[in-house]
Length: 380
Ligand code: NAD
Image 1: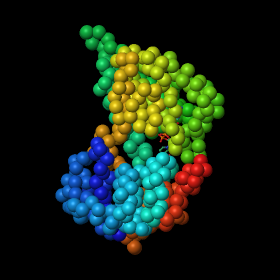
Image 2 (image 1 turned 60 degrees about the vertical axis):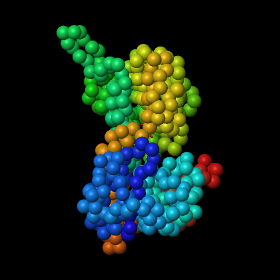
Image 3 (image 1 turned 45 degrees about the vertical axis):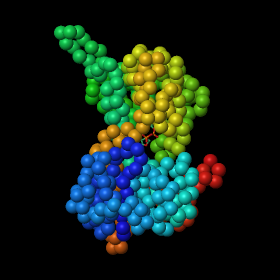
Image 4 (image 1 turned 90 degrees about the vertical axis):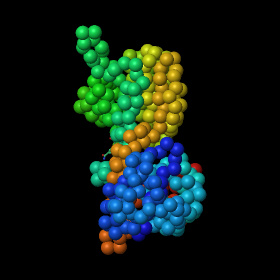
């Protein structure tokens, strides 16, 4: 089986889908691994390292697409790249299938088996393949470092002959994977941390990191069978906003990570709350790219409102591209390895597999994921 790995072309993307170590492991499994020259440059890996691992290097990007049995990527493909793929080719990457209708249709028409990394179930067994978690973890760390860089204060308490500095107050909204890592990182830097999440099970996790959980009575919230938050009603959002207002006004840093899987993130910090913060305070809106948890945040930009810095940077894990590549590559490798047919030396698309079927969006000329199919047909 020929596994091809083209270079990421999205502006500013330095992460690499497969690092040399995993390329070597794929070769040992019997795959013929072809990489595009310069694949690892953004994360500090040379072509030579891939060649030493057993891969072949190509300068011809089109050849990679047209000759691949399996394409391993980070970001979704471009439409003109899909047109180059062979019928029956397997393509694994982030796909954003809830929003990328034209792309999903193109993959279907081309007869490509498109596997979406976002759709890996969040179960214990699939943790090693869970790229949403590995990248969110790093994003949580990066958000705190960004906030600390822009805040004109330090995070820890400091008692010195020149006086005592109080610790910074950090408020984290949304304590999933990224939020919990943000809490842990801010605590390590010595900040006083408060957090809120709509899933009640999170309270204990927040407290075990040494942070305070803000209690807000929203009535029934719960979570989906997959462990995701349910969307709040507009009344619940109003209660949450009101209850957070006071904490936000006393915070030096607010970090927002609230997401509802497959839906637009809720706006939880409004302009009047931003205006209530002290000048110099910092907000990091992790959801900026997908609609924003914070009014006034701008995707991929750092803006100022009423003296408050609002950071809307996307691709936060990409800021630590070396580690992010290692983790994503490990997720991708584990997915391939878990579905590898040892005798035939190939990735087996097995609809009886316990993890894979839920992640397959298109196969054999059809959209096979029921949720996505419904959305495309206008049913959801
Ligand atoms: P996510 O990115 O979908 O959302 C981030 C957080 O925002 C979630 O904790 C969610 O509850 C919260 N949120 C949603 N609306 C909110 C609101 N109005 N106010 C405050 N917070 C709000 O979540 P995620 O980080 O991808 O994690 C999703 C779930 O999957 C979590 O339960 C996580 O623990 C679980 N998970 C399990 C495993 C595993 O068991 N192997 C692995 C990874 C994640």
